[in-house]
Image (tube, rainbow, N blue to C red; front, top):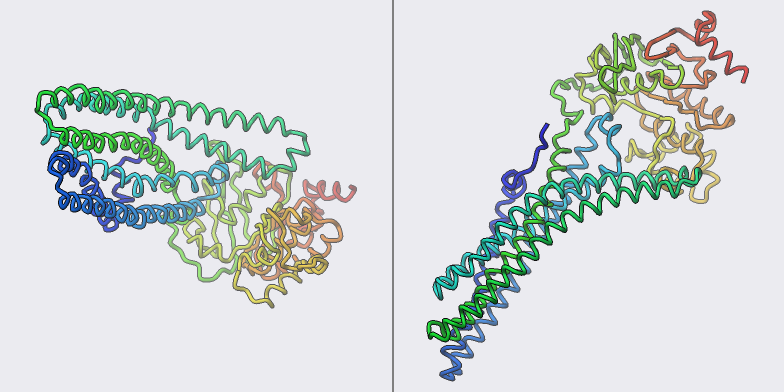
Length: 579
């Protein structure tokens, strides 16, 4: 499948056209600024040919005043252009970053399973930077340079058509070289964005896993991985620098040939023949410089626009990803949830033709606790992920209160959902902020109830700052058991109707587990709860226990029923009891 590229026309329609009023104001300011820039070179001819020879002091004063005023106009226009376009470009970058981040958060879990978080950070923060060159400095230079070059060309033809046409030969050669160089540079810039994202992604993982790296004495190994990444980046930059160097060296020679060789040789000859006055020669020289400067600038702009479009290519890829909330068939709104969940012949696969669940069927009544047990990789977490709507079945149906979950609006469903994971994520900040995460506007009384229910106060009371204690990135300053209790308090405060507990007590010592079991007993009352547990002693009171093996339900029943049948569950339970 061919890569979709963002064309200049597409970028114009989506970025520039919606802001056409500001852009038009910017263009007007550019025209005024460039018009003022011609005052000095045009006045030079009158200064040398008319004013100095005749010693006209009055006209000299007027000419100097006009030139100074022209420079003042350019300065004011430059300031206004920064206010109108450059600041607007920065606003657009922040706006686009927010849109991309919002889009990324709306993507399904499967997308994140296949994408590095560090790479996504790079794409959100770096790839949109090119907008500045489309509407800010790049637009000013492109439009302003075009105006300057065209007007300069007209004035040059008025002074000497033959000299003007002669200087155009090296300029045309330079334009041909630049166009070919741009064709080489664009795919290089696009590849650079991918490499940059990969390198940043790996670096993010390295910093997050620093304890594992040091624990296995793997600093050298990880350093080599990073060196390989930055070497790939270096080679990519080398390619673009080579193409840029070709343009730069070509411009140095060809533009030097036009401005110096032709001007000094052919211009000097015309002056000696009396076909060109001293004032006209200097006017031609300055006008030629005005025309050549934006051409050189536009070659740099071409590189900037190429890099900008390459970044927008990758941004558009993200924006075109299908959001899980925008699926057209999700039209059912759930105003309330009872918690009646049914799996009917549900199958699921992460990869094509590799099913991990096979025709799973069971029912959970409102308020029941259903436990999922089995060996690692048997499919327990996948079933919980399907119940939470993080995943979608490839066949079969999951219903919530007799409504097909695949047709239910996700926001209306997930506002009634709570999760406590084995390695639950805590945000950098305070304990209070993490517990309040699902309900930032909860009252102090509601917060304290959640804190006591999860026995968080059992350890926060020993902290000088209490609930306002900073916990570091991912809660690194807390023990595993403390982090888990904060996660449970967060779920208590959310007050969900459907609760997913994935190894919620795995990080707790025996004493903490005893406390948490009491809080979980209160938490699960009146809530449909899915419990994934390796410690079978924690699920004896579950209404249903499903024993999952190789993506199938091997056994199903209550604790007493499964013990009596002396099957797989019996073997697991008696084995743990002996340990």
